[in-house]
Amino acid sequence: MSAIKKIFGILWTLMGVGIVPLVIKQAMKEIAAKPSEENWIFWSIVIVVLMPIIAFSLITFGVFALKGEYDTIE
Amino acid sequence: MARDNAYQTEEVSSTRRVIAASSVGTLIEWYDFYIFGTLAKIISEQFFPKDNPTAALLATLATFAAGFVVRPFGALFFGRLGDLIGRKYTFLVTLVIMGGSTFAIGLVPGYKVIGFFAPAIVFLLRLLQGLALGGEYGGAATYVAEHSPAGRRGFWTSFIQTTATLGLFLALGIILIVRTTLTVPVFEDWGWRIPFIVSAFLVGVSIFIRMKMSESPMFVKMKKEGKTSKNPLAESFKQKDNLKMVLIALLGATAGQGVVWYTGQFYALSFLQNACNIDFEQSNTIILIALVLGTPFFVIFGALSDKIGRKYIMMAGMLIAVIAYRPIYTMMYNAADLKQKTEVVEQTKISEPKVEVKGTDTVTTIVTKKTFSDGTTYKETVKKTIPLDEAKRAKLEAAGKLKPETKKSVILPKNLYYNMIAFVFIQVIFVTMVYGPIAAFLVEIFPTRIRYTSMSLPYHIGNGVFGGLVPLISTRLVEASRPGPGLPPSDPLAGLWYPILIAGVSFVIGSLYISNKTNNLDAE
Image 1: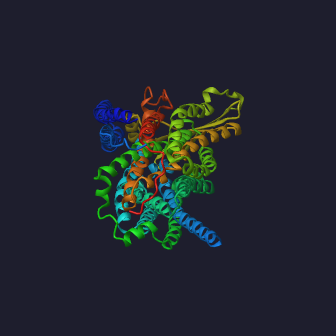
Image 2 (image 1 turned 180 degrees about the vertical axis):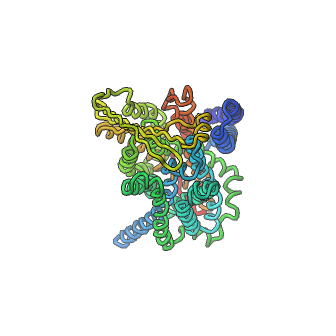
Image 3 (image 1 turned 60 degrees about the horizontal axis):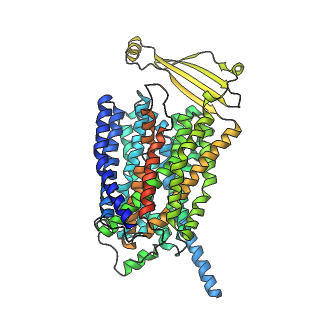
């Protein structure tokens, strides 16, 4: 079980790192295609609020899992 | 023996008083919070420029989200206070802030009267509501848990868990009563303010009840021994041992729970009204009945979690929700899809155009009524507003802003109405599975000295940010599936991908990393 937790730790870290360029690229694409107020509001909320929370928590959690911090939890 | 029994009876009775006093206040806070979301469309018309209805609605949803996004800050601010000075006074303060802000929203003049100040004031008051709610829930859950006997904590805290749904129920109920008592135009003009103003009375009663409560016994003991935390924020989030539990609580439990909660209640209502075009009264009663039928299951799953563990129930709820959402919503959509029904053409009625002069505009209204072979009825009201002033009309025409406003309303026959209740009820069951045991789960993984702070943050990020953004992100996903402006979405269920993805990830993390063992609450 500990090995699986650690392997998944790599996955969570990669997901956390990967989400940042993915979201920013999509936001730039959509705002460039239609620079409306609603587009700006939506992507601002996603980039300023949601993305940092997901990225930070997944990366930190992934690193902890990789280091075996959760191995003792059964 | 008799003395033991008397002591136990006294203890149960005291716990019941604690639960009742805590729950009433929390319920009212949820009520205050949800009337804003439930009246989003009207608030959008009252406080935001009307030029673009989608922008106005999104502006309201953004305000809605702002209310949710500030919740984590409220959790940090009041959580810290609760761990420093005590649970009782902290959640008394949150109640006063919440009640005051809600009452004030009901009194703010509209955009037509005070212009930009109207949305600005409403926005600020909404932020205050978010802050107050951020401090309330963690305090109530901690307070009740610290009064509950070991082995029954899931059961007792589940009553606090019912308050969010009952608060929504109360909000929908009061709105429905006010709306049906007044006429629709009067409700949309000023009647919508009544549910906000009613809050002042409810909060007053709740403050009176809470003033009589005593402090949590664990906190009192810790304070006497001088063991309270000097810096709850640093202890909660800078110490690795605690931070790792905060992360597991967020990613493995509250994020998934948050999206399941909002999908099963708010998204379901929005889907019924906007994707299925179900009549306002019918869509609200569908949700109300499903909530009433589903609410006891919070307590059932809370109590069950004392026996078989919190993890299994929460994870099962998330997994079933992920698998079942699309089939359930497909059935909901099909039940109201007029393209799949046979129209009884001879019963179709199209009214003569009704032309009225309203202020500086000419308003032309045409009403079409259709009946279908399964008993479904459909009413479409097309309203075209044209300015009397030629220059203004030409300007709006050139900008493509003279499009008619269309209101669609589907009324389902009894059998399909009951089916809809069943579909929403199933989703409420998912909600009760993930939400019923979660307060007990959260309080048990953090130590008493920093419990209020530590449990509040993951709860409010999970519910406020991940869950609270369900309406905004799901609306956006449906909009993105439209092949062109004004065309119907290619996938009306596209909005479900967000909750499915978040709950799916949360299920995997929770299953792998969360323990099913029930921890005892320590006194430190």
